[in-house]
Image (cartoon, rainbow, N blue to C red; front, side, top):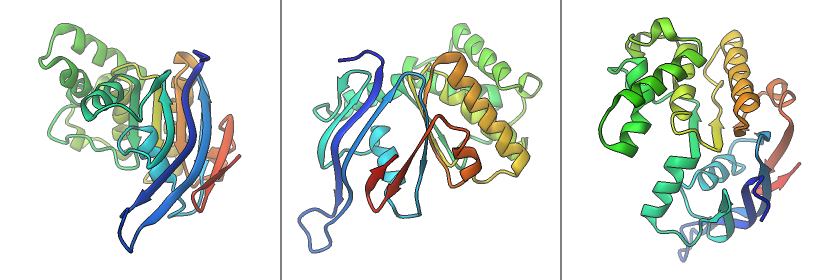
Length: 228
């Protein structure tokens, strides 16, 4: 397999309430390939299957049928523990709501994924977190509680946290949806910087056509089907 491919879906389907009168298929055979360094926008109306697609790529949910490879590893045969390991080391998440721990400082929030992997803090983790905080332009805010930061600053911390494990793939689900235009543009510019400087593959769900036009390519999810 091409080592430059970081995400590959083939014939991915997802149904809910299987075996009941309420069984509903949400994704109807999705094919998608993302290479290292791709910056891909995902658009589509509410209820079209965008979030379901992102959850499957992020290994938060399993497809009903089809195959999903992440960094050359077939995931549909992995058990929950193996999925957790792969997700923790290869995938970063940024959501519409930042999901920071507001009683923790910005620096402490960025350290959380590393603590989850190692089990205890060390000097290397702190150094890595400080580097990431600096990269998102928040060095002077690193010891501030997350709850005392603006929405745009909190999303910057969330991006730094998502990069803590140097993921190959960053999944961004409406990360600018709750921000004003200036903050949204700044967060998008930061994601683009991460993409270009580190070769991180980014799947960017948005309803904003102006931001989608700035991505390398755009896919549309309509009624559980994908078009480019």
